[in-house]
Length: 456
Image 1 (cartoon, helix red, strand yellow):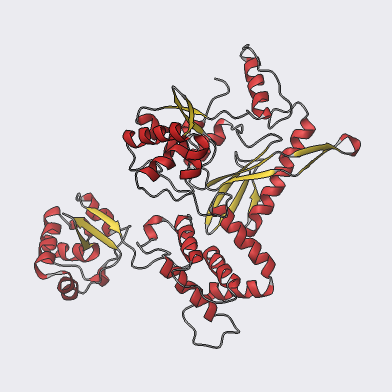
Image 2 (cartoon, rainbow, N blue to C red):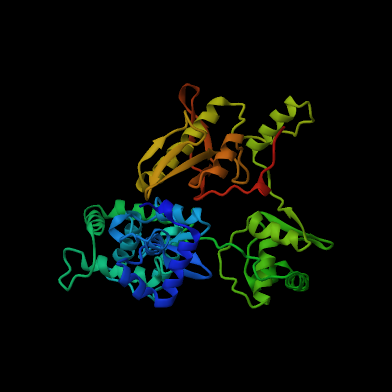
């Protein structure tokens, strides 16, 4: 007896029996539970292992008992898919809280005077959104209520009652909860720093909510045109004061009357159309430039200075290609004439990146053997960290072809960039790097529309 004996007709016969008697009676009569893998057929879900066991009876005259075979991705799923059926996994419960999630939740409890927080509390709402956006647990493992505000509130209750000094009735809590609580008690400063680092990593360097996507969703050409008319009627400053928005960081809409800040205009269009404009929003090519181009608008990049390192790289490439060279503007990232300064900048950026990621997990230096600089174990995922240092502004960075290819192919990649680094001369002609401003993209999603080649 084997699952290879199944036929498509025998499976359809088992489905028909299921529909005739009902799910509960079908499972009870044949001794199966629902499991986590379901056969999808004509808009309905069927317990795949139960269907396979009963279908074997229709095919051979000998149904398979639940104890006679195992279900799931290695057995029943491929057997049914071979017959043209679709099988999907539907977890019964949400995954257990990971250590990093517990740290963030308990940080709320500590900052609330070691007391629980209720569902309606804005801090609970914010943490719920943050946890749902983190990549600790795969989407296939999550139910619809994964880390909902109710779940976050219940977790703060569990953590409060698990504290050794709590004298009331205890709720649920596990080993990880107790370990995190003890670490907060014995080393509160380090754990607070770890929580802050986790939050910063999850929000791309910001302690506010994660940036939202699809800012143009629901907008038409007419909405954008209406916003443009108000822009020119009110003026730039009055328009942005009315609808929110910031100076152009990436893209502008080019009109006959001048350039318009693209993201600010889209936010105004959402406001005028009665759509939610609560941010912050992603202002990249996929969410702003490409949708606006598809509506017929001419989009250009905002006028920003090119970092000196990129200018130096361009001069090097243009020189090899015998093209006219751009005049130098000063200091820079990557193609520095002063090799000692270049090494000092790189070492300074690497040191700051290690200090940032050390509280999140084990950090391994891979700079000498891989195209990325660090590997960090965060919540069971191996993150590849690309580190960049520059004496210029955080506008553009130089990427090798391998760095671009890897960032596109690997799911857990982050960019840690330190800009505006100061360089001073030390003793014995050494270079000392200090200061700088950190820009963190975690995760880092490379946008083809924002890549420009330095040479071919």
